[in-house]
Structures are given as C-alpha cells and as structure tokens.
Amino acid sequence: MIKIAIIDDHPLVITGLRHILDGSANTEITGSYTKGKELLQAIAWEQPDVILLDIQLPGQTGDELVDIIKGKYPGIKILVLTNFDNVFYVRNMIKKGANGYVLKTTSEDILLEAITAVYKGEMYLEPVLREKVLLDNLQVKNTFTIEPVITRMEKEVLQLIAADMTSQQIADKLLLSKRTIDNYRLSLLMKLGVKNPAGLVKKAIQLGLID
Image 1 (spheres, rainbow, N blue to C red):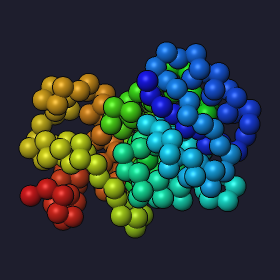
Image 2: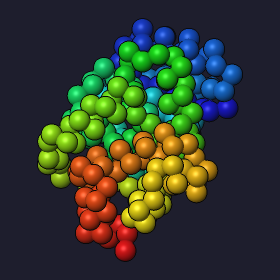
Image 3: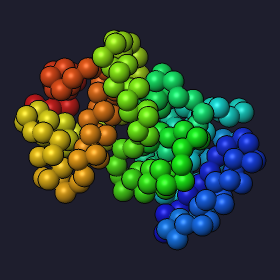
C-alpha cells in the first residue's frame, strides 16, 4: 500500500482525490490538509510515502513546503498536483526536489500512474508538460540560480549518458522502461539548465557531478 497525504486549499478537490484514491487497491490516505502548518505537524508521525501537493496555498506556499519537507524527510516523495501549467513552475518545483508534476485536469489513470512512479523513485512529468518543457529548452536559456537537487538515480543516469549510451541502452542496463529514462533525461536538462545531452555532460562535469 502506498501511503498518501493530500494538501490542497479546496475541499472539493480533496473530496475528489479521496474518491479516486479510496477506489484504488494500492493506495491509502493518511490525511488531508488545507494548510502547510497542518501537513508539517501531521507528517512528523504519519510519515506518508507520497504527498500530493498544490502550489498555491494559504500561508506557506507549495514551493516553500518542498524545501522544508525535503530537508527534514528526504525519503518522502512529492507529487505536485496543480492548475499551473507554466514551464516556470515546473522547472522551479523540480529543481527544488519535487519528484513529479501533474495537472488537476489530468485523468485518473495518469494520476495513479504518477503516484506509482514517484513512489518507486522515478521522475514523472505529465506528457503534455514534457512537450512544453522540451520546447522551452530549445527556445529560452535557463536563468534560474536555485541549486539543483540531483537524486542518486539521476546521477547514475547522468553517468551513463556521459558514456554515450542511448535511453534504450540505459533502460536495459537499469531494468527500467525507456519512458522512465526519458523522464530522467528531461529532469536533468531542466535542473541543469541546458538544451541537449552534450550540454548536460559539460555542465555536470563543471558541477563535479561526474568525472
């Protein structure tokens, strides 16, 4: 069972999420909250596996909560669930350490797929967002100064990219799907602010992430 906490300031959204997750055999809701303070108090003893996190919240915003949660409980996975489809928000939340990003307009199947993926330690971006981010990578130079949070698995994928392996070869080696590796590639491009694998390897060497 995947233990899930929900934070959203709209009761109707919480009700809808509860309906979806209660109908799944693999998920269990540990609690639902409308304010960051409530969530932080609860997860100290509830320890959910995954947090469904909205960005726009009263008091502490979603991006502030990611910093706090990842600092205190790095093992908890964070799946952003929001109406914000702007690439700025996607980049910002992923750089801060969020494990996935989906929109509130998504289907139940994609939501459950995203929850399972981040629970397993994978990076997940809703398909429509992947296209927007890839296009933005080609058009705009990333100017964020946030220190990127690179996970152990991302570092491993990065090493294999530096070894000039394709996504399929990396997937075969790590026993993951090609789509999962493509998500890791996109996450690394966003976090390091580069446009292609060559730039990715160059930036990773500069930051000391690979030899």
